[in-house]
Length: 248
Ligand code: 3Y8
Ligand code: NAP
Image (cartoon, rainbow, N blue to C red; front, top):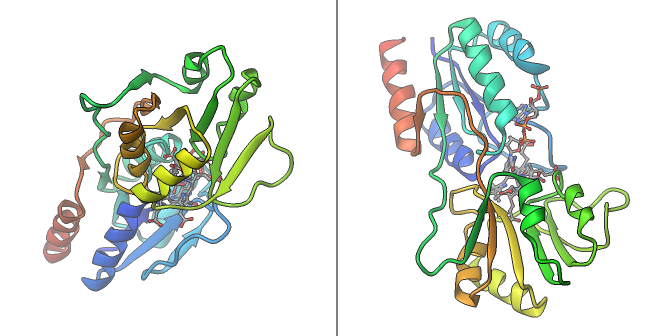
């Protein structure tokens, strides 16, 4: 009997959960517990880490999981690595739902960098108004460039002091072009730092930057282990549904 574990936390994972629920498939949705009030899902939901790859392997055995869908964010590299290892260890079929990276168009002014440290180095020396659209966990390195006026955007209000003086917008997205344009114009944003998340939930800032002719320092995705990977919910449903019918 099929029982799927969906490693979630993204808009695509939420769309998949709706489809799986409507199809009446037996599945569990999993959040890492990064935000205070994650969106509700139409599936039984667990929140929090598993305790590394071995903890996930134990969970798979204990809960009788027969299929794992890694629908986490492209930058959730540790979760994806653990899922690959745990599924290999337990012989559990794994599929990744991974949206394509955003591609630079001829009208985009992108400075493409490999990691956060390179993004810090790519900022100008002179003081600038910088929008760090990279969340909360990876902002500390920008403290090395305190001359800039930073705007941050978090899902939840900041807890405790920030590593440097900055303005914080609290918003969980998905974001709109009009909202991004207004925010950037009102705050006089001159530079944007973004990670290549892909998907539609955060692409509005890229469209807004293009419309305003602003430079975007774009951080490339981490390398993920080789695994079966699709870009659409339909392909995951086919993979699940097919196996559900065959009882595989
Ligand atoms: C907890 C689940 C939906 C899904 C919303 C998507 C869209 C908005 C783009 C910007 C960039 C950022 C951040 C972002 C995006 C969607 C999607 C996506 C980027 C939630 C969610 C969880 C998280 C965790 C959170 C991180 C943070 C990253 C904010 C829920 C809302 C910046 C990634 O405070 C923290 O610790 C937050 C941590 C990981 C990156 C960081 O390092 O701070 N996402 N985001 C998931 C869990 O616990 O398992 O709360 O409901 C999901 C979404 N985040 O339609 O409801 O791409 O699917 N999330 C980045 O760099 O792109 C925002 O502001 O422009
Ligand atoms: P990460 O660094 O790859 O993972 C760190 C640890 O968090 C994992 O080893 C695991 O703990 C736990 N974890 C992560 N995702 C989990 C999940 N869905 N269910 C159960 N445990 C999970 O993860 P992250 O980048 O912080 O992302 C955390 C969550 O936010 C994920 O659901 C991801 O999809 C979502 N998200 C992340 C980003 C981003 O920019 N990284 C953007 C949007 C959404 P154990 O080792 O204890 O098992």
